[in-house]
Image: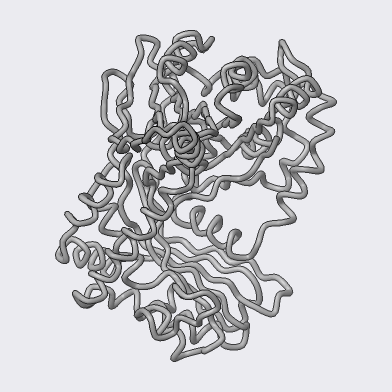
Length: 463
């Protein structure tokens, strides 16, 4: 089993992979031809119990089934901050019908893997194994999600894993976490990591209350790849989940132009600056920000290359400090987003590098057509390359099914096939990208910084 913190995708796109080597080899041995069926847009079906089901039968030799719940860290309160981090660590512990040892041994004996991924909006429990074993293990996946026991001694035994997660955070991860808090304060500003003062305070009662409140049918999506759709439907119908009481209402996010700084003894400074962009619900506007991200630059496209002459952002920062590294940042949540940059530089020159990067960001509305076309091409290539990753496909289908699909009727996931991705990116015009850039150029910014900040300017000093 594995458990890892979600990396928030800059664009919540559908990624898929075709694994046909096994079938093609078998067809060759028997002298028969095998035609690869085209990947069609994925339809999400809302069942009477409000659970959304979405699956792709891509004939992969590896089957993946995920239960995705809208129960991420944005739904935590001041009393239970870090609950999602603790739940991620607790994935696979004893349930009402299985012991921790029994879960681990049964999945390992089948050659499978169970992972839990926690983000700001969702928690996903994913089971992957060979096609012939997936049906035998689905009962364990259901029990891990719906019948968690939270034994006190097992929770305390896992505290070192939670502390290790906190200790392994890199400066750029900490900067992005602080950036969300500076931008949204609560809600989306809640970190996907537990605060240090909450370590050891997530008792079974707190975890059980969080699960009972948010692990409900109308906040759940069941998705799969390389799985018979009938199998998914049968499992979704039998999920022992209650309907929501209707008392839980998520507050709409409000953008705040705040600043958070964390001085450390590092020799470097990591700085993140961003303005308000668009959420996934805005559709085309969110995609325009993704194109703008690649147009400004996401770092070198050649391995070990500096990338200083490849795009406006790295070119501008290199003029101030050749040792600085910078990448455009575009984060789209369901109803809000951030767009800006993340920069790392030696402490003595970090201030000049930040000023140069902000200057490029403020002047992004003057970006040329050549850079925009290049950004569209790089984004299209990145998404199609990512389409080849089977594990990411299941994750992204789950995100779209949980956040964008209707829980009352059948709907089509917006980015679930290569043809959809190509058409959507081609449909973004130059004026759309420039409008997105103008929104950032004229809007207020938020800022976070980690490291030696002796030369890093404050937010009110940025021009």
